[in-house]
Amino acid sequence: MNARRIHAQMREKFPNVDLAQLTWTNVVDEMGCLRQEDVLPIVVHRFESRGVQEVLVEVHRKLGDLVATADLTDYLSEHHGKGVIRMADRTFSVFALLAVNGVATSWATASS
Image (tube, rainbow, N blue to C red; front, top):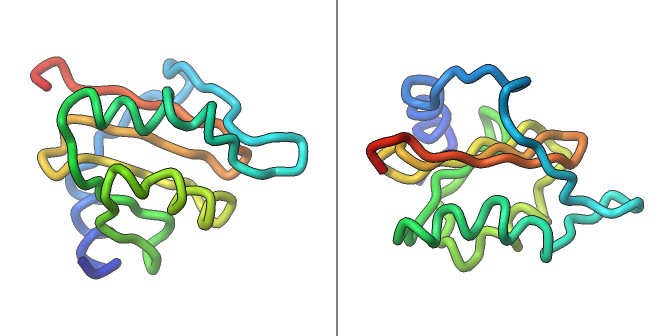
């Protein structure tokens, strides 16, 4: 899936949320490397627990992809720090964010 299309979908369908109201967890180590053991429960398991096989990932408007849930940690490891990474399932009912500073959060809508 092309990055422009993902960007357009995210801009249209990703919810505007009060970021201060979300629960954030640090998922990088002191060297700035993504800690797999922290990102798995915060981000990946949120999608897996709802049967999501592929995740729309937008790193920034020119970089994004449709990533298999099993490959999500590797993709995030490669691209974290390049922008606020937004993630959603194709139905836009499960969401996650990975901020530039290495904190992550995820949530699902009540209907998912």
